[in-house]
Length: 326
Image (spheres, rainbow, N blue to C red):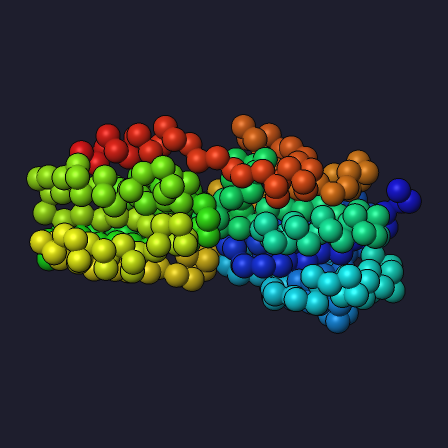
């Protein structure tokens, strides 16, 4: 690889709290190491259309505490085509950007992997997603903040659930991963979590009812991961109304509130470490890797592993939730 003099940085896919902290870290670590930095706006779309700006240290001042992403984000169908990726490569050549740092989730890394392979181009990915579903890293940027948001929301909903003696299904994000639902349930003292990882093994709602999950409680809260596999909170509530009409059921879908807000200290520190590590990786001539963290140590995870391997749920946590909800 020829010496890297200029790096590009972009955020793509769903926003996550802590992305700005990562942008700040990448920019400042690059400048510290004598590299130029060019910010690409609106993800891969901006790479195709050429929405690019030179970044200096002051461009990333006072952003560490902000949620969302100052670089904006967008879905880009064109980047999914060979022609679109060629236009993106032409932009990088024209702007004299020698390597790319991408911040995002599974889709972002998938696009980066294909692009890097097609054009033999150095890319390092940083895992920014509240879903925490990327293999090879204990946690992803935004996950801790989303978890705290869920906990805060459930604490408030429990006041109403208790006052009215109701059963609440609270739907949380996570796509096909149950990390937010499971850990959110433990953190908020919920009675159960319905997650996609075990949906094909057992009728989770049936088990819940059969075990008499309310027992001496005058209210119950169940966290549900949004997923076609679980059916989502609305479908589960409808089933309860039909099969167990004795329960007074309500549904709350937390939705995009989980993505917003100022990042927690954990997410700011994680994003800062990963951003600095991304520059280290490029200077060490690493390419096509995601920055991961395992046992509090930075690791380089090949894109193929991060994307193709399913991140397993910790089944001990399921047992912990069952014990503590009795």
